[in-house]
Amino acid sequence: MIRFDDVTKEYPGGTVAVNGLSLTIPTGQITALVGPSGCGKTTSLRMINRMIEPTRGLISIDGKGVADLDAATLRRGIGYVIQHAGLFPHRTVLDNVATVPRLLGWDRAKSRAAAQDWMERVGLSADLADRYPSQLSGGQQQRVGVARALAADPPILLMDEPFSAVDPVVRQQLQSELLRLQAELHKTIVFVTHDIDEALLLGNQVAVLRVGGILAQVARPADLLAAPADDFVADFLGHDRGIRALSFVGMPRLPLHPELTLALGEVPPADAPDWMLVVEGGHPLGWVRTAGVQGAVDTSDLNRSGTVASLTASPREVLDAALSSPARRGVLVDDAGEFVGTVRASELATLLEAGQA
Image (cartoon, rainbow, N blue to C red; front, side, top):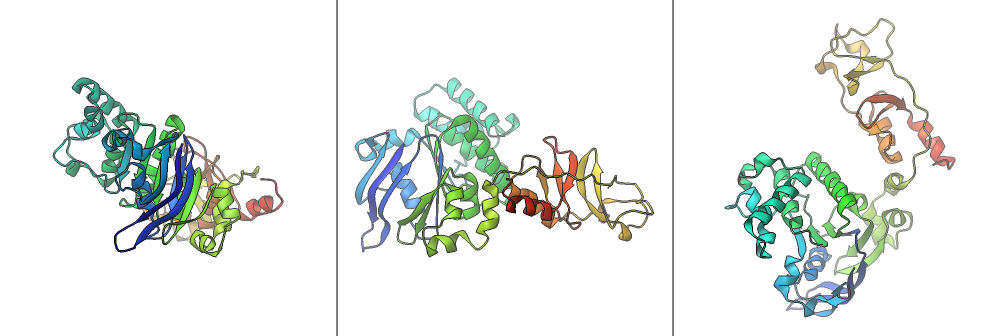
């Protein structure tokens, strides 16, 4: 457990970055620090591993004040992931990942074996081991950064906006990877982000900071959305809090509707409905407006605006699938990604309103 007890960071000249922060970060969970620029998120994070020293107050890990620990030893026992990965450009991927084990005195063979294991666990193929950071994509570099932070299996992981520099698709993949790893590893993670959706997705608890480094509210995501502490928190959460809250509501038993489908290369029947779903090998590809198809369906006919939800998705994801579909019918798939049926937004709304979730 990490504790902040009335911690303040004031710089020469009087600028206060963090002001009287008291916060408990539970062991084995993800705590997301979120807030606008200048609210002290990164400063708070970096005071944990003493990259920044507090002016007043106490920070402790499992009851031991970090100020009483040797700074270098402290940092070697804490994983640290930053934006743009911060890799050593002159070292190969494998040697980057093996950095902390080597600093801890592990021999070369043990360090490289651990590095190879963590590369695999974060989704990096073995053929990347001898490449250099400049030869990797942004998403691959961030995975290397995560693997390096975890290579010595530290109990604590500090992550400072690690996914903000990659494109939305890669960012979503990295978020999913982090949740998958955390389900297995149960690390104590402090995750800094300016993105409230990312904080709500990843955090077991979310701490909202206001400008000046003052804690506005800390709560579980569902509780934060249900009961913002004040206008600042409510405004920061945004005006679609009700939609966001659907991510934390149980899924009701939805009626799944069968759907007439087409394959690429097929001609829509004469009595075809206005919109038909195109599938390939059981996997949905998109919708086609049958009146606009000239002959056999090909990829140029596809409307890909609709999202796809799994059978285990949250009500928010299912509602989005229904509302984003040009046919207004949400596509659901099983764990293998194969189409199982469609749902209607109106039916989901009725069930949620009736309290059957």
